[in-house]
Image (cartoon, rainbow, N blue to C red):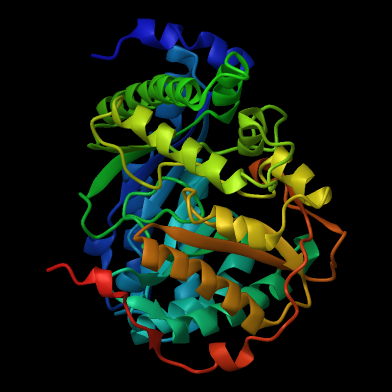
Amino acid sequence: MINIFEVKETNDMVEKENLDVRTITMGISLLDCIDSDLDRLNEKIYNKITTLAKDLVKTGEYIEAEYGIPIVNKRISVTPIALVGGSACKSADDFVTIAKTLDRARAAVGASFIGGYSALVSKGMTKADELLIRSLPKALAQTELMCSSVNLGSTKTGINMDAVKLMGEIIKETAELTKEKDSFGCTKLVVFCNAPDDNPFMAGAFHGVTEADSIINVGVSGPGVVKCALEKVRGESFEVLCETIKKTAFKVTRVGQLVAKEASRLLNVPFGIVDLSLAPTPAIGDSVADILCEIGLERAGAPGTTAALALLNDQVKKGGLMASSYVGGLSGAFIPVSEDQGMIDAVREGALTLEKLEAMTCVCSVGLDMIAIPGDTKATTISGIIADELAIGMINQKTTAVRIIPVVGKKVGDEAEFGGLLGYAPIMPVNSFSCDAFVNRGGRIPAPVHSFKN
């Protein structure tokens, strides 16, 4: 049983080591809002979100005050909008009206972000899926804190290369429409392989069709806590290192479990999952890269980095699984560049390249996250990078993702400023050799043989 004494034990973690609950995310099903009339659809969506989530922010703030645990974001995720808007939307601009409704509903309840402007196209695209995808540049440019995701592949279905090609073009167009703010629109757009239904983190959160009408999911975060714990066992064996990470992850996850249960009780919404992910921030001392250095690397990206990250990811999961009845989402270590000061420093010093990051994504929680690249990078090159990352997820039966920002007007050596939790990023070089003929083949890459398990 979780009690207040367990939370008091973590006071030092909160005050000195940057422990926080990164997000309480309320998932809301919009399937009962479906209507063939666009105006009625938008009205139903607005009313349902503002009714169910009206107390979300207030509840989060109450828990913060009651237990002394910072809850950085209060977020909302909804049913993938391609499924909800298919009957009413006859054009990309029709879908943009829903994007604006989502952002307006988010603002009305005071939520930090809303996610779920999404399409699931791992095997093929419906007309509604394609219209939503083509609406993304306008939707992301004309809304403030609405996030989008597109699932392009899975272990069971393979990779939809037609959609991968299209998404390369969409990311370029989104960058162009938001170029005045360092192509900020691309920070709110992520593409997936094996996207989970219960992810509380943005930009990839959506409310899966297998979920209840509404749900509470919580994402915890404690890179600073893990680093401080490892400082006390510097020079010890791998066995001691692993035990320390597991015990620390257990304590951090117990905090998340407490917050999730309390939010569920106060909001009268079922508890879904705790996501164990170590999610960094630009704050000094809140970095996954710094953990890797504490394990024994001079810089993230040095030889041994992938092994150190694999160890970290596995021990976090082993410790967290003991602490919560329901673990889900992504659960592992995020390695975004712009949101992690240690990663930024490693890129600046030449220790960390795009290719090394790709290798690290084989064992981390997500994938290539918050990577800023030159604005003149070709759409087909972006599609090739996406295909590489999705292939890692498909073959390894894990979630992988790409959130990449071709910053218009910027070149290698420049920096892009995104602000807040999104931080800033040095522009990373991209392999200049062409993959045009590969991307332009059309069709899909088939599922791997080990996916046939029925």
